[in-house]
Length: 259
Image 1 (tube, rainbow, N blue to C red):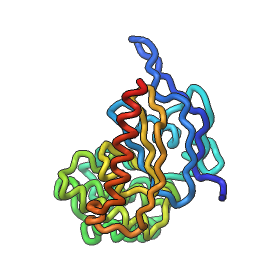
Image 2 (image 1 turned 90 degrees about the horizontal axis):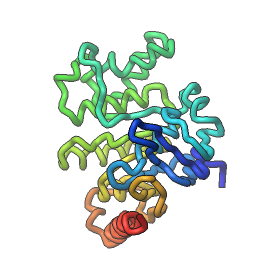
Image 3 (image 1 turned 90 degrees about the vertical axis):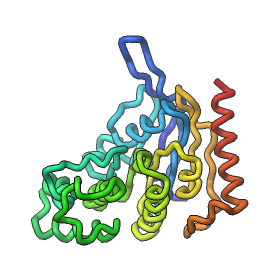
Image 4 (image 1 turned 60 degrees about the horizontal axis):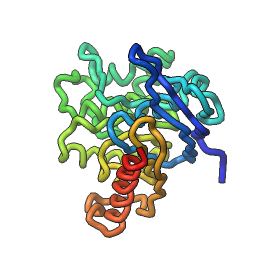
């Protein structure tokens, strides 16, 4: 097997606060291979987002090691090795959708022609073609999140890190975006790290599901999914899907019992 794209070994992270230390992560070790879709699931405050931010170089572990494409997270960030999608779309209301998506390209010094080409390409990837001159307030919440994903894809990094991007959306829109995200992943073959609170979402999207315990966040189970890469929504009614969902739920319970 080739070297993992993301490799964590014995990762700890403790925050210093006025109320004393907060132990966010404890002894987290994980390999993520190129092209995998890996979901992180666990109770609120378990360190899912903190771990994603460690991968992105936005938080610094207090112990252990982590590498991204063989580099430190800081070097990977400077090399623009990943795109990051936050929980909120975070679009600037005074910029058009096309202008929001092109912003990182402007900062990185791409030519106007290259910006236009990339914006048009990623807008088509997320089914937003024709909306580049609209403003964020003219789009639904789901469309705004798709624009946020397009912005993260614009500079064509091989890794996409997503922090609960669909958590605030209703179930119908969420199902639709889950389907679209799987199609996008199949077309781009990117490595995706995805934080979620939803068991069905984690099982539906992932090739690997990482189950985490309450704080301090530890990995209680890593589940390699046997589901096929192409997954219609009704696969959620299959015995295989239900069996994986049960294992995720058992892992979440075990984390609570161990504490």
